[in-house]
Figure 1: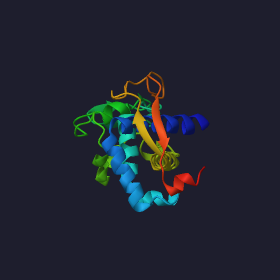
Figure 2 (figure 1 turned 45 degrees about the vertical axis):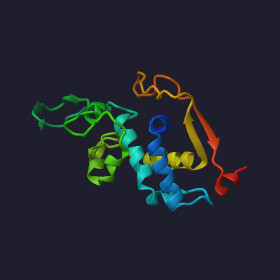
Figure 3 (figure 1 turned 90 degrees about the horizontal axis):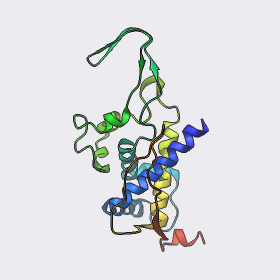
Length: 201
């Protein structure tokens, strides 16, 4: 439970920041949302997240492009069933590749591009498979989404972020059961000069 709850959340946060650094216009929109609904005089809290839907869209889009656990744990069919055009006899082991579904152009428009605004349409959220679906869905999905969303929001509220060079960050994926970045994330950050941040030091 510790591995599932920490490793995946940390990886999602790292992917989110990498995507943001490659799309400074998204950072600008997210900061505007934070400054408008929370303001510069206090640190945002978990209770503020309901006023920051664009931050949540960033997390959803990160989960779509980079599901930390791209292949679900094996499922066993308890009875004969049909999935799509496939007939599965009882006791068939089924593996779901969420990464492939999330990259499918039949399901998503412009699937390889980072576009958080696609989740402003709440119907799109039901297509995400990052946490599984139904009775076997991850029981920690709500906690994970809240934790990562709050972390992203605080990182944007408290720091200015920049890439080290002019080139976009390499978004190549590593190998493993959970998918991390192939290369370490190295960026520049500086404390924002706002009253809320100045109170921290």
